[in-house]
Length: 562
Image 1 (cartoon, rainbow, N blue to C red):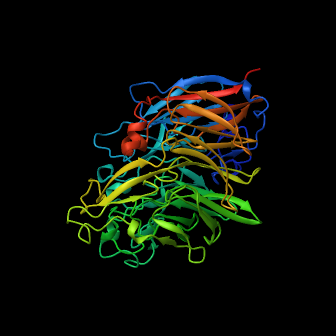
Image 2 (cartoon, one colour):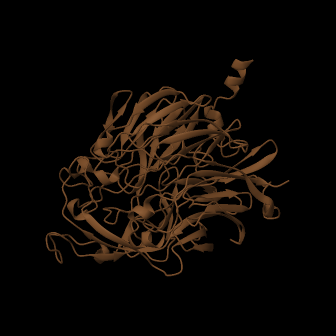
Image 3 (cartoon, rainbow, N blue to C red):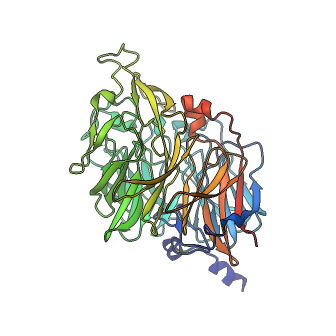
């Protein structure tokens, strides 16, 4: 009998493919590999939410706080949640009792750009798999926390790290890399999740060779087509947010980061496939299509934000709220641009997106100046004030989509930056920026805003403004939307009107996305609390605005009071 119980508890490909529809578990990042972050559950609703109270809270403990960005996973009554400094915990999902924990031994000299965070794990078979700040993948037994396999992604001393929740689809474990500020090469890797053995590698910078089953699998793009000289060899484009997968198209979608260095005058051309969405066939490891949001990115806008697939007007589409301030709707099968519009109040770098060509209408004078060109003195180029700031109209905090309302719920921020370029040359393990900057709020009364966006019309149907920048994700559940704020509140609003119907103070800033599930006839909501991430580290004048916020590290879980 024990053997049968163990087999029935295993996570299968079919279970992961069905994750968006099943309500008694959360098996993947995004509540389904499409990343809609929507649950059809309605046990908790606007009529009874005044009875939503804490069921339990669990502290990550230790002296290790900093940013907590993990999305919990739920399987067979267990919660698997990662913490800062490459830790993972298994808890009883009903009581919060700790079952086991694993603390990865981190070496001196790791170089994560944007805090010691982790965004979550993946489940497959009897394993829970997560990535570490020294660029490794670790697979543990779900029951015991024993390490089953461990694989190195790359050299942490060259600037590589790993923070995203891995993606599992088509029987493959798909991961990206972090380290775009260090001249790394962005890529997507697929492994056998049971063993960690590499199946294929697809670089996302043109000129680099892909591999499948240990053999060459074709160069990405055409060498030097959109990069000058040798710049592609340290081209960045880190795939640091991980990916999504859509069973209807059979494609995996990964966003790519900024080209290296930030100083765009050193790398004239579009710099493919940086600041893009790339669609990859998991069976072949080949890029099927790409869409580049910011060609020759000179503002560190990246293109890593998640690509969420959904149905509209009989088509399978994908949406992305880019750091550059524009919301894009693409055909998920072929990458054709269907719609693009700003979702923030100010985009100084482009006047709009040409729907015919798919390219931005650049404002040339809003590109930071060349240090060796007009207005530069050799050491510093002409400074410009650009909006959004490089932390983006939306950053890592995931948006949600409700098939019930047809709206996307986007945690947006309103800020700008003074930015200028400086000379730079590549040195292994050193920051590869060639730019300086100061981030400033655009408005006195708010920076963050949760916006309900209609992907068809581009209209913001409602918004809830927030004094501090929003940095946690969104959950759509039934007729409600849940999200957290740096001020510590988990909030719920009516998904149609934006009317706030509930809030709870968790004691530290929330920079992580909530989840929900059913267990023994009760619906639970859970979120990780713990202030940190990029804003206090990179936020300039904005960082001063939020320096009163306290760090933390805990999981809060809620249910209805009987």
